[in-house]
Image (cartoon, rainbow, N blue to C red; front, top):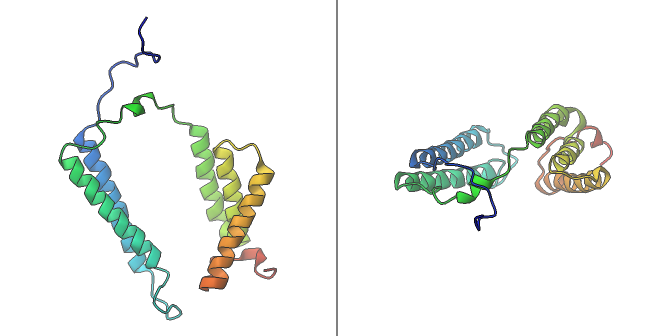
Length: 171
């Protein structure tokens, strides 16, 4: 009997620098895509100095910088060769991924009709369920408070309409 508490999983192919380079390239691509999308948004005269594109530009630049750095490390031999803990990772939970994907689709389908607060609250409850929450009422209340605060922050403080939906006349 060995001292190793885990059974031998057999030979595992190590990550290659090429895979690390691909990850870096993909992150760089996402950053460039984010920047392209941010610059495609028309400038509004309603914004003084900081407009709707400020945060997407910051995120895009951040992703490009991180992607380039990951690519450089990938060219130098890779960064994932020391990730032995991934060998013992649990299997993918496809049910949870499906629920999260459904939550995104629900958000997209309902935001125009019901508005941001209700659609995002439903999305929040579904994502909580995907992560194993067994308290839907609590999740509903927390989601409603957080989403309402986000809506009011955007609408009242920033003057950005993110879709009030049926709550527009009430709030």
